[in-house]
Image 1: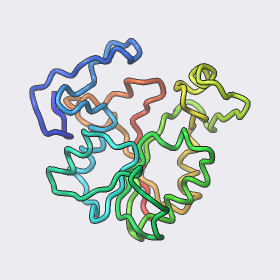
Image 2 (image 1 turned 135 degrees about the vertical axis):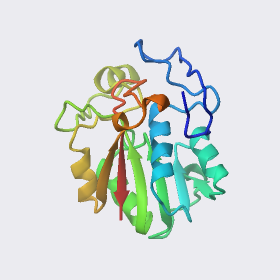
Image 3 (image 1 turned 180 degrees about the vertical axis):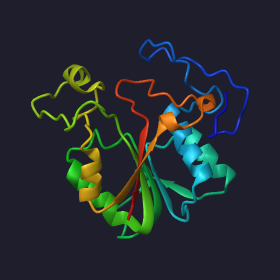
Length: 206
């Protein structure tokens, strides 16, 4: 197996005990701990040109920073921001598994659009029920257990449906969807390991 995040080959991907049982659950890179969606993203990095001049990372992962470090990309973690950035600041933003936890989807996307530089890109990933046409969100569901039952994760406040694309476009982005299943089997791009991991990466250009 091959991990495009750390560029290591002949790997035996690992199993994480927290993951749901499945025949294809050995999906964690033993070197950089990448999951399928991270490897798909780095595979996209390898085949497309993005402007990483000013890069912002939400939900920072070692596997992503490993790839960026190889190419000497300077990046900033979102948690290090002391105040809201000026408009048109970042040329690339990795917004990984954040949108399902924020209080208001529209407000979060509006802010992402505001701080993205003209011509810049936001890579958005989130849990998605690909069989649902609309996002499921119930404000009466408030406990971690109830949220896990409803959305698959205890910290989620919604589960996106196919209408996530419409939300991103309504915020002003031009969106291209990259599907994990189109990538080589050697990177284990399966729609796993967690519930509703669709491995769809939404590349949103301003």
